[in-house]
Length: 467
Image 1 (cartoon, one colour):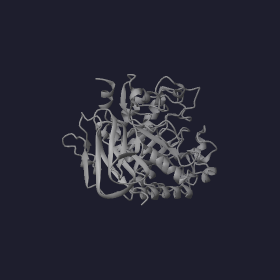
Image 2 (cartoon, one colour):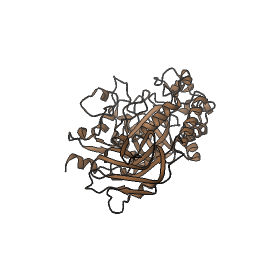
Image 3 (cartoon, helix red, strand yellow):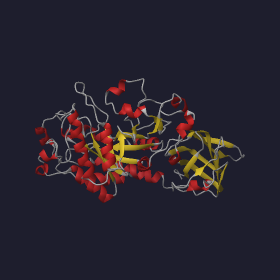
Image 4 (tube, one colour):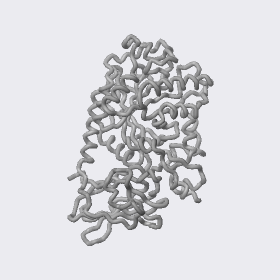
């Protein structure tokens, strides 16, 4: 079996498919660093007194994320400074040692409850790097870390993901993380939770700029998971594939004989320059246009989008952030509000048994069009009785069968009955959003130029966004 055949046979787990379907969700960076001059300060237990979010309102956060069209919320339960947003039994450096509510608070509990109440999924971030814990750098720290992880996985309901940060700027002390032990505990206690970034389910896209690659593959070398698990120093390694490389999955790249795995990308970015709250950033939010571009290039480019919004010292999102989230939700709703009528006819150059072309009209992932295995340039032709104006398409590959499509064209039939290409791209994966100048036609053709084995499409829909 050659390397292309091997790549074509790699498929996601049910857990990874469910994660992909979330598409767009929110990050909340909140901690002791919200009250200090740096996002990652060293701290004694006494510094917990600075944490005092007197107007904290978890429902405000959740409602703001809902207004943006998000599906979940991920909370930094412990960041690098080691301060814990829940009353952990394993350190005093937590909310139980702060003045707010006389130490009787539990931020994690309130956020988890608000998510459940308003229909968002809830996830936890637990930083492996801990600048406060005295056992850091010893085997005892792994026990400490797993004890805290167990608390988060057993006391706060269903968890959709556990997010591990690969950051570490510590040069004097190195911690040998028990990654396999962390993973085993998550699988035991929250088997449906995805383990993200420093984990086996989801990888970092390689930047914090809000964009992924133009050609984003979910089938990539397994070495990338190894480099993600080596905080700080892996960035200096140029000889081992890592998440920052511009090409991770092309035919040329995977020809080098690496072991491959299904490892989809997540794009993480903050709505403002800093990850934690900085008052000077109140007027420096990303514009609506920038956020929409990030969405279209990530969710529309085979990646999920994780957008951070940091609460202020009062424990609230700033009004400017709330307004921008609402604007984004309205813009997304408008963008997808005017789908073109269903075609009167859909013809395939070939299709496998029980995978007829009309199945692309439905978002039901159990039905899909699949080309014949001998069709070197499979195509779908969609026809309307009357000319129709179009300027956007959404295409979803049937990732349950793997990621196969390497390049495709969208063509339209002009008034002289000539096919003209109006959009071209490489990969599709979970979702490709195609924006193009307005065309008017009665026929559109989706044509696969190159693929790994057959082509399979779950969903194909056109839109009239400017009508």
